Image (cartoon, rainbow, N blue to C red; front, top):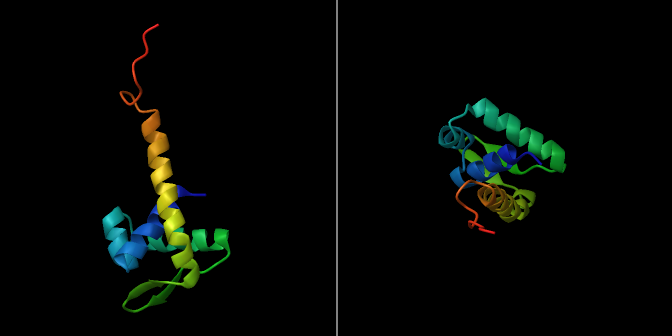
Length: 92
């Protein structure tokens, strides 16, 4: 699963708008739309209903959101586990 697409999904869910999420992520709105479309195709469901005022989570989007947040937390912990200075010093 593409973590950047998941990160984008969470950003849109929190912002409520594709444009605001794009600004928050420092990418274009078109890139946000493409990432969400790719994630929706991969999952086989619509995650948002799009309206002129913004984007609202569908039932599937609501179900996916807590798992998406957990995926991002796990990815952060995995990266942190191998960063220099994060592991205890072993002296044999």
